[in-house]
Image (cartoon, rainbow, N blue to C red; front, side):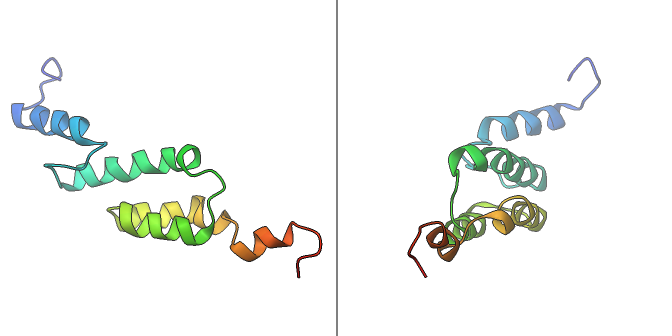
Length: 95
């Protein structure tokens, strides 16, 4: 970043974001919140495969830090997640 002419404060901020992007400690800036949400968006399919809507809704409300991240998560995962009723419909004899 030095070769590109970035200011020392910017470089420190970027390094702090990277260092904390899995822990959310010691930093709460708009840039950090965006990276935090983006990281969760790419990890949800692997970390919570087949999770039901209720579980995903709790995760979104608790974990995501931006309105845009919550909205995108809803579009990508929550709207497609099975509900408990949908899961029961897959088994013969359930009404």
